Image (cartoon, rainbow over all chains, first blue to last red; front, side, top):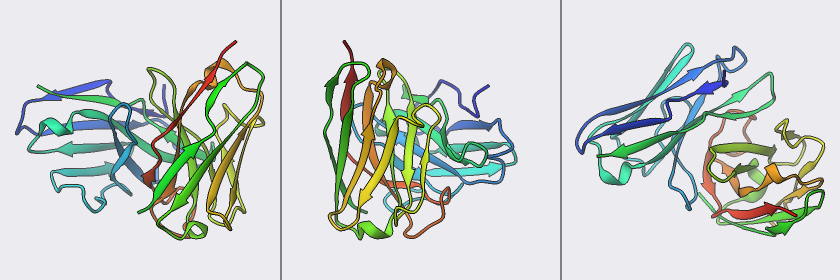
Length: 110
Length: 124
C-alpha cells in the first residue's frame, strides 16, 4: 500500500464540483501537513494548496482542501477546462525523513 | 516567488555521473530551503532530495541515498545535485523547487516555485 493513495482518475463536466481524495497510509505522516500540486505534462508543477487548506496567492477560490485523520481531499468547484491536469498530494514522512507524493490523479474535464 | 533554471542534463551510461545545476533569481536564495523532484516517463512525481536554507541538513529519498548529493552555493544562488552510479531507473525529468516559506522547518513548507525541468537519460 502506498503511503499516500490517490484514485488514478477523476472526471467532471464544466461547472461541476469534483473531489480528489488522498488516503494517508502511514502514522508517520498522520499529523503532518498535506500539500497539493497541479501538473500539466511538459510544464512545471504548480502548488494549489499548502498546509492542508491554505490556498496560494493566485489560485482561484474554486479550489479548496481539507484533512481529517488519515484522509485529505482537494475539491474543485465550478470546474473549467483549464483545470484538466494531474493532481498530486504530498506530505512529509517523519519515519522516512522525506517527502512522499501520492501516485497522482488525472482529472479530465468532459 | 522566484525564477529557477536547471541545466546539466543529458544522456549518460549506466554507472555514470552527472551534476545538475539550478540557478535561482528573484528571491533571497539563502533564506529558502530547496529541493529536487523528478518525474520518470509515464510515472508520477517523486521527491529526490532537499536541503535546508543554510545547507546545514540534507535529506534524500531511499532510492538515491548514497548515490546523489544535494548542495548549494548561497553566494552565487545555485542549487546542485551530484548524481553518481546512475541507473536506468533514474531516467526522468528533474525539477528544482523552492520552499514557499523562508527559514522554515523541514516538512512545513510546500514548493511554490519550480524550474522548467531538465531531462536525464540513463542508457547504454
